[in-house]
Amino acid sequence: MSAQTIAATVPSAPIRTPRSGFGGRAPVTAWYHVAMVAASLVWLIPMLWMLSLSLSDNQALTKETQSLIPQGFTLDNLLGVFSVGLTSRWFFNSAIVSVLTTVLTVLLCAMAGYAFARFTFRGKAVVYATVLAGLMIPKEAMFIPLFTMVADVSMHNTYAALILPRIAAPLGVFLMTQFFSQVPHEVEEAARIDGAGPWRTFFSVMLPLARPSMIALGIFTFVQTWNDYLWPLVSATKSEMFTITTGLASLQGNFAQATELGSLMARGLIGSLPLLLVFIFFQRHLIRGISMTSGSK
Image (cartoon, rainbow, N blue to C red):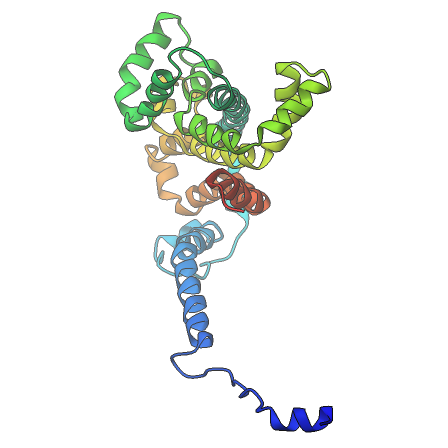
């Protein structure tokens, strides 16, 4: 029997057509995208409203403030952000405090996480549990002890007072411990065979591997530090040491500045711009770092 005859006698498999209607995947995907667009608009509307107000004339805003379209379009509010009060100094203070806090927190948490994940020492479980217990303590509950400790060494109204209380981050220690626990031990063994000591292994081998998780932790730390309001309000009592959050809040107590809604929104927009830029440029690293820390591939 020829091959053509055998092929003719074998029944062919039915050809499946793509499913359509409400039971198919296409409508589900379409509704998913519609939901995501709607959620994005809910988040974007306040930002667009703030942008519209910052581009509006202050006199026009005394009559209408509910429109997403600028009323009496002007760039004077944005161009005059750093000419009012000490806004430029406040912006600089926030940049210094946020950057230094982020660097020190990431480095300290990486070292602590590496120690908990790789080293064996007496009382390790107790110390690690104590560190994680810090996640359950609200930071507001620590304000009085922190304020007293900083006051005892006369450090209020300094950068050190704004930075040091933040660098001990239990969440960062937990994230870095989880990451280093997943690194194969063969990596360290290979470094030891090549003659690398503990510090060389940590800085030259382990830290480059932990870069995604460190970037994710750095983004979280930078955002929280930049947005922090309560501790700078408590520790910094001199106007020249205000951060951008406490500085902008202080301007609302000024009647002349509070009535200029366009200028106030322009300062708020410029103050939030670094956070938007961080998320735009590092969102890929943030997702990758969270995925590696959680163990997903």
